[in-house]
Amino acid sequence: MGFSTLAFNSAIALLGPALAYRQRWHFPVVLGELVAGVAVGATGLGLLDATDPTLTFLADIGFALVMFVAGTHVPMRQKALRPALARGAVQAIVVGVLAVPAGLGVATVFDTGHAPLYSVLIASSSAALVLPIVDSLRLGGTSVLQLVAQVAVADTACIVALPLVIDPAHAPRAALGALAVAGCAVAVYWFFRALEYHDLRGRLHRVSEDRKFAMELRVNLCILFGLAALAVWSHVSIMLAGFALGLAVAAVGEPHRLARQLFGITEGFFGPLFYVWLGASLNLRELVDRPSYSVLGVVLGLAAVAVHCLARFLGQPLPLGALAAAQLGIPVAAATIGTQLHLLSRGEAPALLLGALVTIGIASVAGGLATRRGLTKS
Image 1 (cartoon, rainbow, N blue to C red):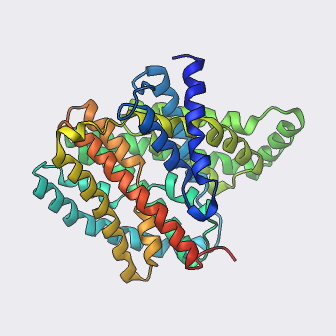
Image 2: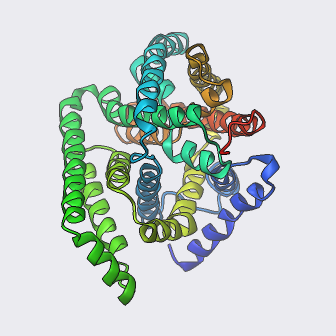
Image 3: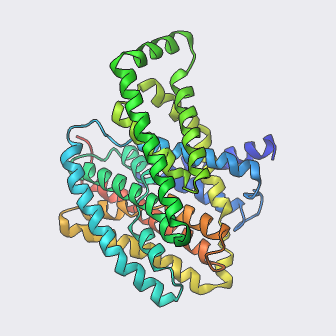
């Protein structure tokens, strides 16, 4: 891989902002980047080799950063989040319970034997997708805050549950790895709290701003990569490392300077690179040879949306239920781990990702419906 690949990737990623330019379309930027990747990758023209190890490593960095930024977007310090957290947790639990029979039904119909995996997929939400949509559409209000809490709870729970259900033989090791990453994130939170208490963080911020050291970014990237290394070593997805650190930073209070720095490197380069790489890595042509798996992917996506929309009976507006169903990280991790460990049948991995694309498309429409229903910040 060379600079020409990076230039091509960056140019292709511009399709995302181009499609999202007209606000009335309510088209998420990431969806355009995924579509661009599919067009030039294994499914389409084959111009971008997603198997290149250097490109894959850069995409992993982008994935960790995307999850980190998603975690920092959770309003942990808002007082209104505490009552919303209880309702959001209830919604996430109800969806999780309903996902069990749904996953069992899908696995039975398609005779794959992966009911636990399908249940986790159906119950999952993607903070990396939902929170940027909420911000870009300026959604707000009590129900939206409950949605944010629901997505944060569901995303965290499913990140932890995925390695346990996809590879039960190594579940104890994965559980210990998840506990180690989560414990380190909690330790980071208390470390930042101590720095805040003694004003060391403020002094560091002032020196960094005055001398142009970018110390906040350097320190947080050091911690992020350390947690990601621990996650890889313990066979846990780097999703957990990024999201857990983001929550820790959000709980202490993210400095505006750090937010701007993260926005620049993530949204300007690593995030688009990850989404284009992800689209390019999808080989949807395998679904042509196995039509039943095409149906499986669509059914998984629709089942996830249907189960999440049942939260309407708990008082959640229907568009927000459909928006909560948007998933990305869990299907990607499931397809990656399942392929590496040879746990999935040929065509099943792209089927999982096709299901994710179905939820993303429906969530895009749901976001627009939410704005038309007035679920926006006043």
